[in-house]
Amino acid sequence: MAKQQRPLEGDALIKEVCRRIRVARSYWDAHKNAACRGERDRALTLYNTLTKEQKERIPQELRVWLRYRSEKYFGAHRTPPKSKRRSNR
Image 1 (spheres, one colour):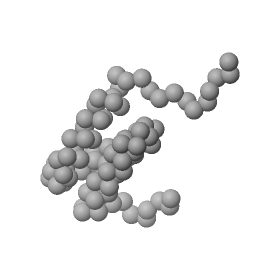
Image 2: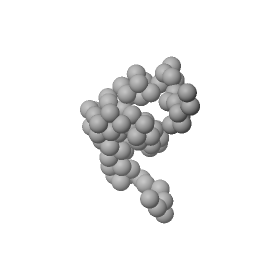
Image 3: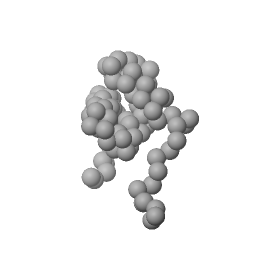
Image 4: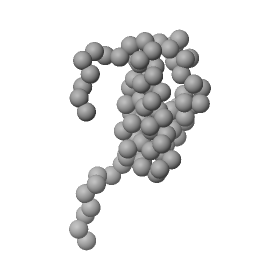
């Protein structure tokens, strides 16, 4: 996917954060944890650039899901994912 020319701002940024959270939720529901983790990281990065007023415009259901999954399943206290290479037995 090509990089965008200008960084997102305003309504476009809020819309993109919501879209990324929804995509991460769909990966989570499909049990695709690695894809969910990557999409959640992207959503969280964008979410952290928002102002307080902009964060309030994101639906509460999405904000709660992002926080809950971030802390419970992907927090620093969790074991990081293993590499995709399998060891030979």
